[in-house]
Image 1 (cartoon, rainbow, N blue to C red):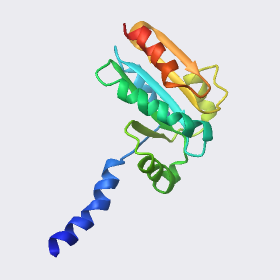
Image 2 (cartoon, one colour; image 1 turned 90 degrees about the horizontal axis):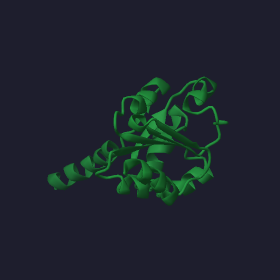
Image 3 (cartoon, rainbow, N blue to C red; image 1 turned 90 degrees about the vertical axis):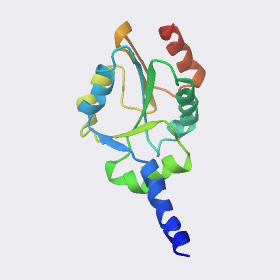
Length: 159
């Protein structure tokens, strides 16, 4: 009976450990793409409270699977409030069984960093930034994106 109890006590800890979400400031996030070298970086800005964002997440999960073995990485950057990480973001990621890398942006004042992402960005989400430092390529989409749309851009750059 002791073994069963011990096993049951470990389950919540294990599930929480799988859902570790790193909180980053904008400078840390920016280093993710400036230090990427020949790796393409796809950064999707989203939030749990944004309906179009939630609708597009399965497309990015599909993209994440497709990227395996390619010189590209996907970052799903949550714009949820940092105080809500345990009550909203982690439960959301668990419920949706998300496998992509999720970062929580504690960006302070968005007016300071939005133009650094793209001067075209009004601040609305969902928004996706595609960067290929080695090919001097940067593209920005302030809209809901499909797997096929993002895949075609990446495919043309990775050839």
